[in-house]
Image (tube, rainbow, N blue to C red; front, top):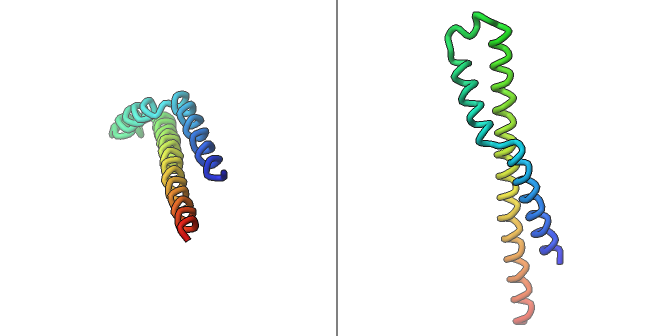
Amino acid sequence: MAELDIGRQIRDLEELFLGISKVIDPVALENRIAELETLASDPNIWNDQANAQKVTTELSRTKAQLDHLHSIDQDIKDWKICARWHLKIQMQRMSSQQSC
């Protein structure tokens, strides 16, 4: 019974993550990171220190957001693998108990 609950909870997390990904849009974050990296690599960026700080701060924040999204996605995938292994072990235990 608990296995079914875990599976349902993981599916709920996946659906929630998909909704969040649509709002946050990882592709848009990747594109923005590329733009900001181009701006940050300009040798003249520090001629305007306020702008340089704004660009580098946004770059750091945007990279952190994308990293966090990737981390959550990987965590969900890892939980799915763990749940499958757990279910497989439970089924093997039940099978071995029935054959005794």
